[in-house]
Image (tube, rainbow, N blue to C red):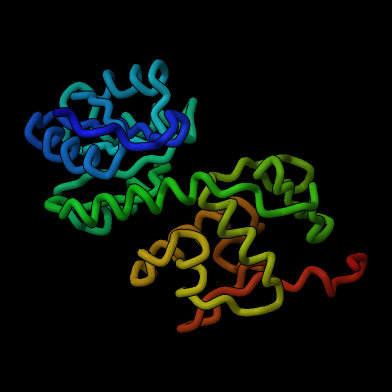
Length: 247
């Protein structure tokens, strides 16, 4: 006798695209994600992955780095030209340079091989949860000063009149920094608010994404004016509400 289907509407079932040239690895991931009530789509190289993203519209991509035809980095670079779908990189290496490269290309997270089913499921749920976060700001545009404004509805910054798009994680980080403008926000609080409680020990995420934001909004990222470092504690966004011309 077949077991009853889970009482979950189709719209609630998350579709995960698993991209790996190792059939056994895809089978291992599929078995464990399906046990967690995810629907799994397969691709065995970067070209198949890009086609699957366009035609099957998954909610998240698990992307291996070492693959034929297109490696994971090149696949991610091409993907980010047309989609902001969440991506978790699967890498056999845990070296920081590999992690940084993936994050700089637009990955939302990484999981080094070998990994446990519990770890993978936890990371997948955390990234999906962040992607599902609604826009947190009610105001359309917040003016920081004559040079910088932020449009939270469009998730872009406006620097000297020119709009600059923010990636979803950059948007969430900027929002939480500006929400606490004038106050130092500890690393642990930013990790919990932006990435999730599972990331409380991943302090390098905050450092990397603060650097990304500074490259986009600061006149001189090496000598920041807006996002200030409080060494050993966290980061503080300049208190723009107390500047002349702001209420």
